[in-house]
Figure (spheres, rainbow, N blue to C red):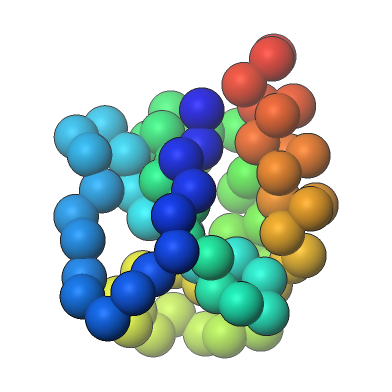
Length: 80
């Protein structure tokens, strides 16, 4: 399950077995299980992020999609 929290000032480490991504115009933080990296749909989203933002790492992975679309993808991955 992706855990959502607002980013406020300080940096926070994702729990073991998860990584942080920032989504949407408000850059909401989600903690996503590492196992999702194996899924082709999630890999495509990461590829799109690389195309749009490059490979520069600045405190997390930024994904170029709407928060509602990301929530749908996470829901799909959780159930399949």
